[in-house]
Image 1 (spheres, rainbow, N blue to C red):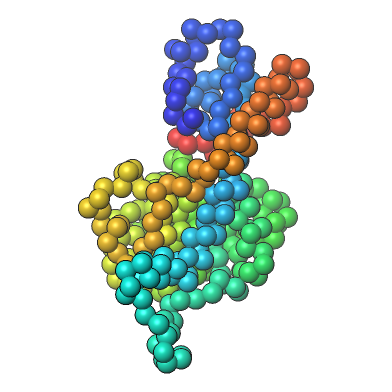
Image 2: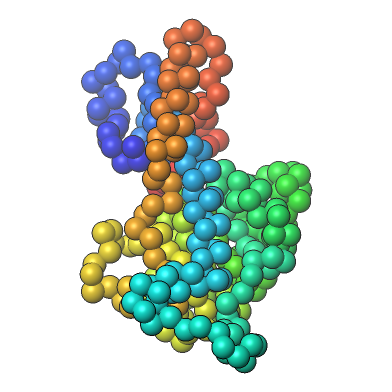
Length: 279
């Protein structure tokens, strides 16, 4: 998992015969301790990407079209039917096609989401300070500063790793600079957003948010996040489907077999990848 087992240096000193460690994800300090001892480490965090990217697209569409609001109203019998067009159409209920989308992080999730957005012909820009310039150029995306990205985006999706460099990457200044009508989607980690600053902006009612992750989980029943009509919530479900688990175990088993056969592993963790792991 991410934080267990906690393979500290002291633990690893007790198992000198350890040669291979397979993880779905892990924290940087444990990964570094393993690599320093010559242990072959395989990591399959990319296995979450297809499901997380699909959830991000789902939340984008749901928020723009307000489908959760309509569903709840239909359940309670309080729905509003359009009787005079276009006078009583909600102007904030919008389509995704052609919108300016900003992706914070362009790893496996961001790249898969870009593929899913292709039919919508969105104007996509990213913010990823760790991304080599040639990858951004090859993908045909502009790698902007965070300040420029929040001004660009009508839809802003957070899909970056949680590390020292990404904490509150969407902070109070960036939240304040979001354009009216913007949609913020977080399928990554709650720590990427200054939650109090986002709440303050959401109270104004001029932006919307769709959140799958929270600073405290499970989310308290009295949390203000549950009470705002312009916030759509899911209980940390983005990657958690059986297809993800199947990919994780298939990839790790494949690398274990490769390691035992002294062949190349496809999901090997390399030292250069440590900065992308959770702190």
